[in-house]
Length: 367
Image (cartoon, rainbow, N blue to C red):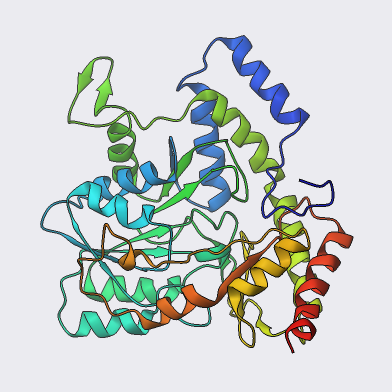
């Protein structure tokens, strides 16, 4: 790979993280311990939530949160089909049934109108998982109103949305629980890791017990649980990354704004951010209008610019879920047309210009 190749993601780790890891190793407490408790408090405070429960990854965060909300066999959970499969898998792990609601074509998030139609028709819904796709929050105001009216649990899948907000209120503080991922490509990382945030002491207690073998103290176990714990080494990285997150976010937002300017006349639709929401651009995702998506992707790769397709196949089209009867034409159309461009904080101004001009120039190549 050449030195001028532009990657789709670039984890930002440096001396601060190395020093903090060294301190943890020196302490001898490298599994679950005080460092993890500190990260839980700090991350919950950042989100404006009362409690945080650290986990081994974003999928285990979702599984534990659903368990803490008493979701299990006989229950039905609705979510978007336009997401990473982990969202649906977490529901399946609980023994509950998963269903899919189509998306809003502007935001790619779960469509509240489509959900409300299902609710009015009398469909059983015990919980809804709203995914904040690409770093743009779902319509939590509307979804919160529906949860109140129809009495279902509301969970945020905020794996891609650290620091995103609705009307100035950060995600992670809405609904009954929220779940984050700290995978290396996310807006902040712990290498692998997850977090549940909630304003419910009961949900936090149940989740914390579930991720630690159902432990209540010592060798007393109140229920069957898992080992979904975060390590102190991961938490040490996370505490430093959390301090750097505002800077990462500003860089992503500035890069996104610059890309939008370059792409003003390009044959793509640039990301749409409703006025009440703050987008943190985990991905900068365009929709190909006058050009074929895969051809544009190949062209950019030839120019040394990495891209990504998130996601080429909706969850209900995956082998694990294709037995379900699902109507989601908007999600299926998006899956054929979306393309994510590099937007991460490591990009230089010249990188952004190169990406923007390459996409814009492609229209001239194909016409």
